[in-house]
Length: 269
Image (cartoon, rainbow, N blue to C red; front, side):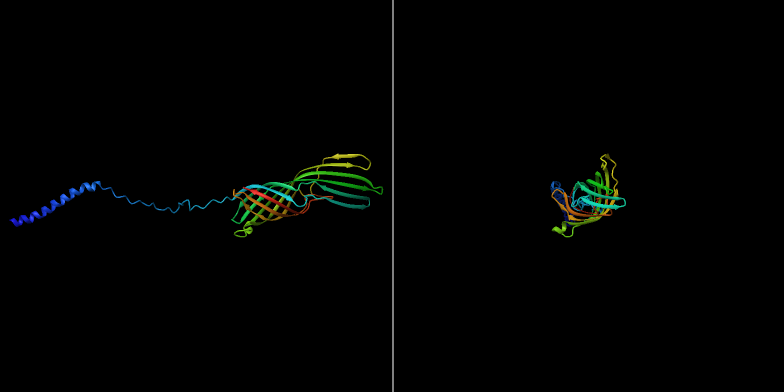
């Protein structure tokens, strides 16, 4: 009997001891801070990109101003003589140009690739010349003088493709060459004609002279340097050559040269 009670008291004593330990540990467990939850890492979207992954935007379009200076006069000074034997007639034509050598206009750039740039401009140039014609008629050489004073404006539209960057650094990195075509249109032609006849009478009219070609096309080649300052302004000094496929003015001694060499500088933003 005593042995049976001893066997029963041992489990009960063990259970009572377990309850006592749990009761003592409960306040401590209640006061312990909860464990920090493991942060969830959001799934990376295949379409989202971070700021470091976004490539910087390239500005492809720029606008500015170009100033050019012609090496040779747009009309030029020239004298021409011709004579006829039947009837007896001798003419002397003398052209004196007073045209401007410097013109300017807006410039536009569009970057096609990192090394190719499409460049278009609209350049203005003021034209002014005087042509004096002396006609000697007959054996008496009766002289009649015609004086033409003409003003006009040239509008040139060059469209060029530039190839730039022939090296990683130094002057070769800034060098560019260009090629394309130029369209020229002459506008606002105003003429004053004075006549002094051998008999002593005079005359005057304002009939505008007619150009040989009002619209003219030329092939253009250029070379220069593309410089960029700290503010992003692009400066392009260059030398340009145009071969015109004709002459705008071609009458008497007045003739527009077909070869045109110019130097210029552009500023684009």
